[in-house]
Length: 482
Image (tube, rainbow, N blue to C red):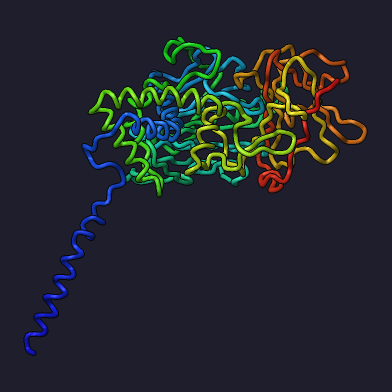
């Protein structure tokens, strides 16, 4: 009897030992193939296509950063303005219709642009007093997700704001109004300042935008810096790869997997992405060992670009379809695990704002579902009291087949709040006439000239009210005129 305790201990130990293989197995359950695992080219192709869809926006951002890295000074390069890394440049008017750096721009604001590279440290951005003018700074990480909200609708006060990598451990100096942190190796800052389409407002906005700036924290002295953005030098376009008919190409399928490893190092997985990223790292490791796998994933990249990415350029493949064949997204700059929408937007119109900041509603087709064409005449009629419900401003912008502007006689590629000469009918309605040829004299104020071939339109609503932001307001159809 006195030996029973020892027997019980022995039984417990035996039971525990029996469980050890299961316990050990649970501890080493991999999130990806174990190192050195043989990977067939066929399997690699499947994972490669997923990696391409996931990584395309971040590789795009990586290559934009590397383009800006070549710049010695802030300058004008052909039809664009660019600044070295961790600095910012402002335009002084609406964007040049011939620029090809960012597709699908608007023609309602004075833009600014700056790219931050985390290894260079934090930056300070200046926010002047805009008065009653609408303004917004988009600050987005390498995933093209916003990591902070700065603008009129957010109640942002004038002053200095710090944008810092998440691993930065320095002290925030006195005089900084707020700090925003980003966890990726690349970030972007895009100021947007509303400007009416008048000579007077073009002149008035210059003093304001001269106070917008971004520079390294090491240059911060607590005093606002001013820049005359009308006084920039010009540099040759070969520094950025020359000119282009379509958007400058920032993702090259044949180089994608050579760059993906750097992107994985600079973009930490979101919660829930750890296993997915581990799969991509295992894929790269297998490609480094096996030329057949390497060839297979590069072929998969070419196929995915052609079969998956290219069709997403069409705006009718973006987001949710609404009545009248309009489409829109509801999670701009907040894509998270929505890889489809993030990729579609990065391909067709990168750098959209948060949904509560700007609603984008896209159109490729008329009320009968037929492709919009410069060979036809159209009208869009807003009934009295049914203009886009906004607290900021709205516009209707027209694009050619490459999502850029065409040159026309009246230099108009959008219309809306900025156009003070719009004419309302006696019943309070507003009709926009979309056609290539000049209409009758009394209709020119409401004319939106169309390109010769296929075209697209986007309705933008800055600071939309809740009805619009939630999707309860829909634009009228685009009616083809007889």
